[in-house]
Image: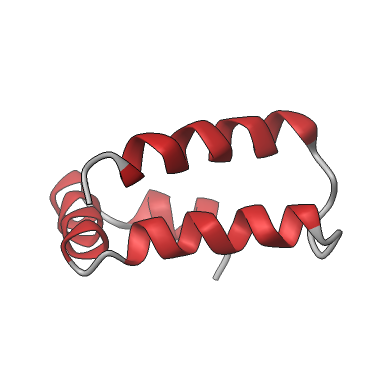
Length: 65
């Protein structure tokens, strides 16, 4: 199922629950780091704007762990 589709199906409460679990298990930081590595290595489409957003997000997440 594509990301957009699952986001339409989940309730706001379910989305928040998923986010809380991702952060509490430190997976959010790992997922962002993995996406950054994929962008750097050309595995994902090289989208500069997405890379910059993910990089900023990673920095913000890293400050809380």
